[in-house]
Length: 136
Image 1 (tube, helix red, strand yellow):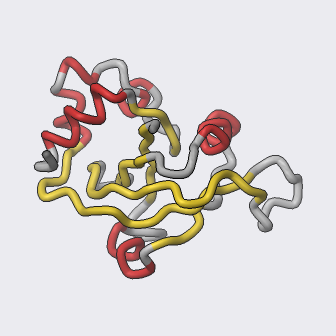
Image 2 (cartoon, rainbow, N blue to C red; image 1 turned 45 degrees about the horizontal axis):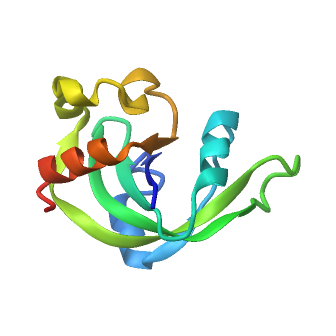
Image 3 (cartoon, helix red, strand yellow; image 1 turned 90 degrees about the vertical axis):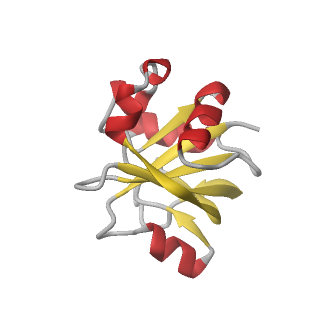
């Protein structure tokens, strides 16, 4: 199993929206590097759900239920999407400030490439963030 993080502006698609539908496609990614990460996602991978914008915090966990497939809204044929289903809300959201304050997380793309909307999370960082968020 691999671990990831996806970002969404709460005004466009929030954790509350995600939990209402349960499972949906993760579309609209147009950055080539983020798209490459979507291509690498496999069914069963776990994904942190991050609220960008003013909130800047990890709020939940979703799971990949359908691997990369073409995004019908993309006329170029270069971009695609995956399907994600809701797993759990973090009991305590993990803010970007808390991530940046933890030296063991300094290598994360969340810190180094803050504009990237889809990124990998190594297993040790996943476990640490999960503990920070109240998941055991």
